Image 1 (cartoon, one colour):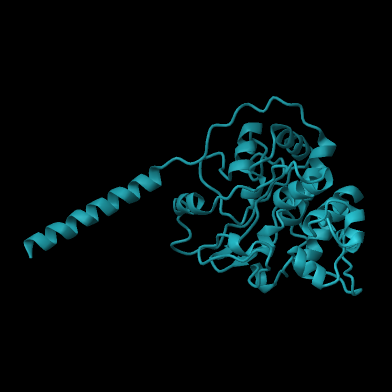
Image 2 (tube, helix red, strand yellow):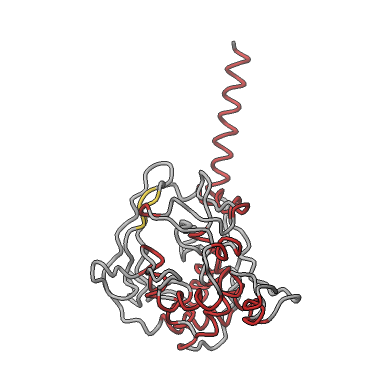
Length: 305
């Protein structure tokens, strides 16, 4: 019995020590100075493509732009997108460009705490310094709103942010935005947008018990979106079977109108209204080309690459 108690005590000590290591374990990497001059117009465009306005503005409540978004109800709790205005207390008014870069690309706040993955930072990890500088320049033009976003409503154990360090180690996937030299420039631009800024897989890919994306079911649809809505499969074969073409998919990203004449609902309606309709016609077409796995519009019309 004494040996057993000694063993249990030893395991407990090791467990506590291990927990302490995880809690103290720093995450993220150092950020080099952002010295590139930002372009406000390009940054505003990238913010639209990335869903910043759609997520961080509570339209239903008549909220100010980027002053905090509508609640996201998930199995882990309810998350409230924060205030991204230039208010120094409740927004990003006292941030530096480097802190902003670390938040966007690594999902780590100025205090070193990891963000919950309801913020899709994993998709922004490949943003260049120029991308970050442009976004930062655009955010500097947002009027301050001196109102705090509501605190997240997350119960134990999900309220323990140190646990996000383990989540990141398991599920911080590369966004796969690198160009494929064997494909067309248009296809590669679509890949960059779809897999990066537009973060389509965040909704159109199912999640496991821990909230990590199931990479084996990429773009196969998701029946458990926040708020109880669903996202359909958008793999090339699924889109083709549902009469999607490059032209009508690009049109839907502009108007929200589907090939059947119906309109997008739920979160996709918001994506179009606050995001993709502001993109150029060329960018919407490249997204459609990538999703349908076509290199050119002509190849799409011919029914092959």
